[in-house]
Image (cartoon, rainbow, N blue to C red; front, side):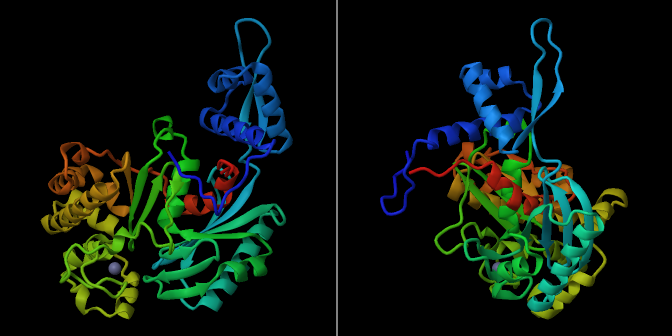
Length: 410
Ligand SMILES: [Zn+2]
């Protein structure tokens, strides 16, 4: 039951119901492609004629296409419908504390070109350099004029409406403007979003796992250089009044805990980020490192996957302990998320999840410890996906996803 906001609403018009049915058809095709008109009509519980009209409109809008002809025992052979993603292009940018990743992709998130380079922390130079790279990437591949936009995922809090980065502690960016300047320099629409939220969008719109299609309430936790969390309720990203909803990475586990990049102490992120896990192994004291030296530590070539490899192959007990401690803190934080939001499911992503076989028991045990009921303790935890560049897929989804979303009414 949702309350209608009488100060901000969209009145349904004669075309609204048609538009909603078109989006329903479009999303069913996305989930079940390749799919015939007859099958679509069955799934929509409408007549073949109604489905055909909707399909025709979607074809005319350039959103779907007819592919190969199928086989059938008798009668007319059906043609299969597909979502048009292969020839629709987006540029995806994943800005991280360590590196910036730039990908040319199609609307399904498939990688067509990739560049990785050291992140530039000064804003005007960052924008100028990025704009030049985007132009070059499109030009050398002959895709000038064909790209539909640039999606930028950043590790921080973003006001998606104004395109301002409110606070990205890892990058040292506070209240800065990127979107409009980048748009002006590339002549392309730019969408900016927090990286974990972008991943949540990609999870909703680009993944094709049928078991996940019905999950409308979930939390997406990305453990990497920092900890990003995307919260989806009723199929919609929760942004909050001041655009910082879901910043569980900065909930305190202990007030006298290690220093976090945000300036406070004891944040969940300071216990489980890649840097925290590595610090445990190498005996670094995070509280004594200045933000600059924390940033410089990105140049350390030893990574969490290296640590996991040590724990696995050489039986390095210290490596295993460092990983298990992060796993325990991960589970404790997930316990709080479960108690606060009670989602259908939690998706986990980031380097440490590649050791899921080693850490699952520890994470679940810690979650059980904190969860307030037995049922809550059993909230499914799933490793998000094995795609190598999840955050880039998230950034691509910023451009592709609006095509799939339901029109707003009431
Ligand atoms: Zn913090």
